[in-house]
Length: 217
Ligand SMILES: [Cu+2]
Image (cartoon, rainbow, N blue to C red; front, side, top):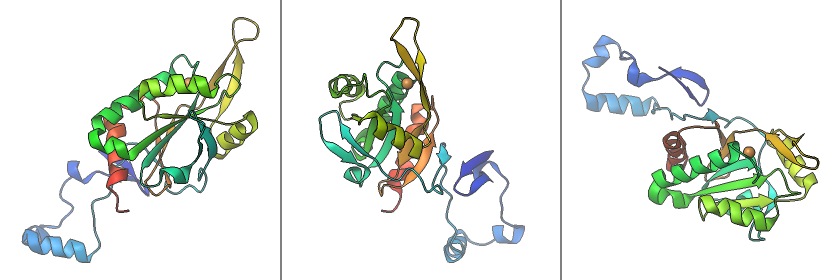
């Protein structure tokens, strides 16, 4: 089994033959523990999602939440943050993503209090704060909808390498928006760490967030 972790692909030790040579196997478990500690070995973390630890973009945002409060990433220090770009009239991707996040929060139990889900609209023309306030907390009362003017959203999306583009609808004046479908996860220190795939199983999302929360602060 191959697992993608920090530093690239590596083989999952659980499903492999012992990496120890025969003579090492004879050593007592205690000695082995000490030897591993001295060698600085530790079990590598196993994130399901794509590791973005090495990127130098996606550092912050300056938006307003659906209650009218200005928000930056630093406001959520101490929490893992999931950031998703979408729009309330989205027929499938956005409601699916928010439903998955709701289920992941349920799986996290008490740890969910240390996770903040943020939904940034890429449709500020139609997604008023009032609309965001109805839509986003309907999935989970703790989720926050974030908005800004068109220019700010466009610059932010560019910084986060998020694509979105209006598509004309079937009747004049209507439109839908094609947009990137992944979500970003930040660790409790505010560092961008993971790209969560669209449609990821809630259990995998919960496991990845739990890993971020378990890291030494
Ligand atoms: Cu969408």
